[in-house]
Length: 378
Figure 1 (cartoon, helix red, strand yellow):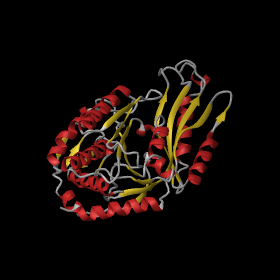
Figure 2 (figure 1 turned 180 degrees about the vertical axis):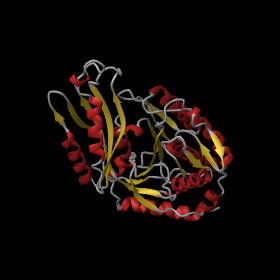
Figure 3 (figure 1 turned 45 degrees about the vertical axis):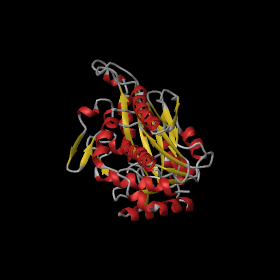
Figure 4 (figure 1 turned 90 degrees about the horizontal axis):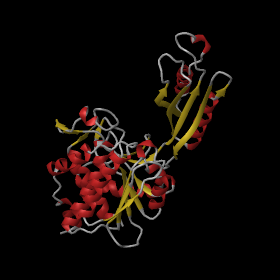
């Protein structure tokens, strides 16, 4: 039997995968809750041990959860790194608002699309290849990280070091809306915003104070109005004040900027800092806390994409590619010049919302694609 026939015969089953995926989704794992993310890491680690992987638990840094790395070959040859994050943006108890459910060919749950479902199909592909006795073309390492949703502040060095040891990097982030994959990503900066004011009693001496919340609100509007064709700004977090009867002394926030080139991102950061001021009654500051570098498409990445496109054609679906916003850890590996293919995960919509779902038929489709890549890449 040819390799193509062997791969086509893999008994991938939607019902089986949906049933086993449920425990992953109901183990909620928001980035800032290290114990919750560690519980999810344990589930994935135990599955990979059962599959015969050599699993290492890498202690978390800076208050973040652990990471896990599993190798499925003892060869020292540069191989394939399949990489994803197990943290999500959804707080614990989101399952009360977005419970696991199946409806109309869709499966719903917090983090199911971004990106637990994609990580799950990596393990399913490896499991099926092993059961069928089909060797991977190169040694395979799986790396699951714990803080991608907050910019990978504690794992970037680990990601870059691990990727440099491999020939290919496969990232099962969600597929694009057209089912395609990602061959390059825009640059991103996260910014910390801080406003200060002059406190006073809001009921008795309102005019003596200057509200840090108002300063933040005014600067927030100015910042977001700087959005243009070259770069965007979005403020996603605001915290300020402690008592309603006090004029707020401090207000903090977090903003995200995205640009299609590194030069444009540098310009965006420069523009944001024009808002900085300080006087006797109030101040406003902007600090860049994390960046994702531009990932420009390379010849190596396009050669990797052609292999994936050909494999998708054998399976029976088209696989377009595109540059994409919305950063991922592929920004880091792509910026290093590594052969990186992103967006290999499931089809669906609603990520980061209370309507997050996957299309169930993409489980078999994308697991079969992943299995084909793992078997054919050499």
